Image (cartoon, rainbow, N blue to C red; front, top):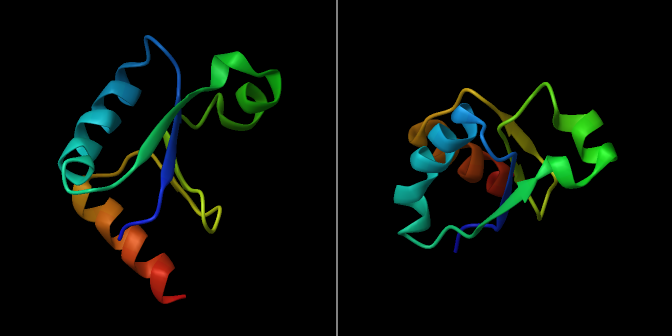
Length: 83
């Protein structure tokens, strides 16, 4: 079972929309992804404002910065499980 993840982004962010599209095939195969709008928090905006979209594993806290593709996400999820 793949770990749960969060995708940090914000409304109107084109790259965030592209990242969501990259993740959709994995979501269709069981990956759980929570979309987190960084505009809701000053702290989140400070941490991620210049980096979004960012994919974060909730189990390890490991982060994968954009740009990424589906293959890189799969490797990110597998590599972290082996650690």
